[in-house]
Length: 410
Ligand code: MG
Image (cartoon, rainbow, N blue to C red; front, side, top):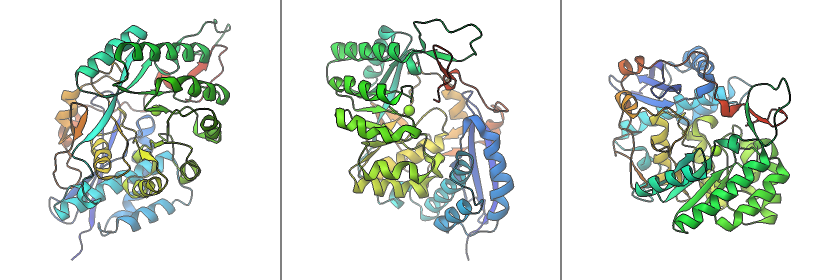
């Protein structure tokens, strides 16, 4: 007799003041359920509505083993598709169905994916400081903790500094000056190489703060620091400029956390214009579509570096790690260490009170717990103690403006 979907719950919580959305798919088999990540922190109520009002009525009674068919049908059933709200909603269900399949098989997900390609997952973490010296200090602390890959920046995305005063009546925002940002970042990497030599692998995230012509020049100037990768040098809308960067330098390029639609990555992969793909798994609809991206990238020599930010549930982080550990073309995994000096209000105690089985990090490696499925569980009562901010959160860095007040898309 087939196992079917009996009920779908959406569990929202914000243990670190960041809205997290977890989907729990309960089955006809007593005690058998799966969890998935559907976190779109800034529009979480839209995702909740999509799941409760549109996916659940269709999915109740469906056979849990039909993961691919369910993914295809719920993606097409809204006719208009490939947006962040619906993709996150679908991801929550998709990951939960994979979790159930793993539990039914008595295997961790990486076994279903073909088995381990390595014993643990190397990860990079972030070093952020108010100025160059503070960032260097953070890098030193993280190196001491065993990290060998570190992403560094000073003063937030774009450097948050201008040499010109904004005009009278300028609107609120995160003001920055691209020239100041580039100069300061180059100074930071000069100091990093002076202080730490060449044994650390270094990354930097431009966070789409540069105009295309500046991005080409900046990637070329950064070439001498031999980065592990330069991230998001261009916005998805300007991805056509990647070929210009390629013509001018050998700086490895990473891209993809804003991708929603296969047409955003197909050409970049086919033309080998990036080196690392950084998709945010729930943003493209979960495990089912991302497995196809992995196979495609493998064929073209492109490695994975899944987005692993603070606005991702531990379920999502564990799914990243299951894919990392079993992918031949894995590159690196992003991880936010509590000592990063990064923007979130880290509260690991609250996070651990809600989620059990969170992957552990030791000496720069992520370790999974080997339990069947995704291996992460949720305490629904504990989740209620840390409610979400209704209406989402507005983070300053998402409202960047140039010195004259022009709004820039982050
Ligand atoms: Mg990024």
